[in-house]
Amino acid sequence: MSVAVPSHNELVIERDVPIATWFKIGGRAERFAKPRSVDELAQCVRLDPELRVLGDGANLLVHDDGVAELVVELAEPCWKRIEIDARTGRVVAGAGALLQRLIKSTIDAGLAGIEGLGGIPATVGGAAIMNAGGKFGQIGDVVQCVRGIDRAGIDVVRDRREIAFDYRRSGLNDIIITSVELMLRPSDAAALKVKHREVMAYKKDSQPLAADSAGCVFKNPALATDLDGIGAKGARVSAGMLIDRAGCKGLSVGGATVSDRHGNFIVTAPGCRAADVLGLMDLVTQRVTDAFGVKIEPEIVIWRREP
Ligand SMILES: Cc1cc2nc3c(=O)[nH]c(=O)nc-3n(C[C@H](O)[C@H](O)[C@H](O)COP(=O)(O)OP(=O)(O)OC[C@H]3O[C@@H](n4cnc5c(N)ncnc54)[C@H](O)[C@@H]3O)c2cc1C
Image (cartoon, rainbow, N blue to C red; front, side, top):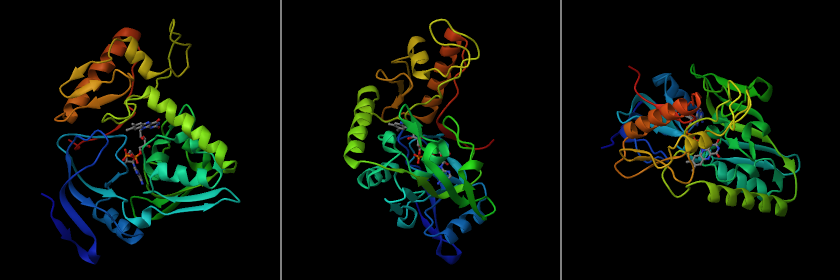
């Protein structure tokens, strides 16, 4: 049961709150807050400098025991604002805005650069932290700067030259992102809509979008040596392909199953526990290592209690 406990200056801290993720499983937050301003966010940091930020929960597995740190969600309207300058291509979006809403707005404004991220569930903050993307581009390519606060509650601005965007990483994990500035290119809205539809069709065709999952569970590994029929040393190869070829499609632990549609998706059934997903991840990792000598690493973020 969740009980709202007002603390000083009206910041509301709720207790024992479920953490909403796309896996639709996992533990709860002992303490949970939805700050309504930068001041309230700074208060949250003072209450718990180790706080965790919940985005859309699309890349997140929360251990069944939940977490002790304060969990903060930027869900209030003040974190969801989107400003678009269609002439210059400058776009500023609050970290809590949904990426898919931002994509629609920028396409409507005739701005190119993020239409290839169609179908990726995320908040703008979560997308920037994870450098969300894939076959059709990644958000880091168009980020100009990121604003946020650090763990001491100090305002931070990171210019793109200071951000180490790489495959599914940004190096921004030390800050709580409050907004992201993008530079997009003026373009033809009708052509962008066509491109966006193509991207969505590709996703629907290759991914189990109706099932409960967190998208790709493992990062595509870079090969340490040449592998016959797989790729050359240094090449980044599809983890889904390795998982498929290791015979893992359809493999289950409890309520967690490797999708038949896409080897890198683990889908959960009602009653599934986070421990089932973690057990299945271990099994898949072992089978891929045994088959190819390649160690695959998680792409999803796993929240668990520190020992
Ligand atoms: C069906 C499906 C398809 C997917 N396809 C793709 C894909 O094609 N490409 C891809 O890259 N990903 C994909 N994903 C994964 C997911 O969409 C991305 O990783 C996305 O960026 C997660 O954003 P989020 O807001 O949900 O973050 P969350 O999952 O809520 O959090 C992820 C991490 O970001 C941190 N975080 C979130 N917001 C902030 C903030 N404001 N400040 C600081 N830290 C923050 C969290 O603390 C956590 O560590 C898919 C997921 C699903 C369910």
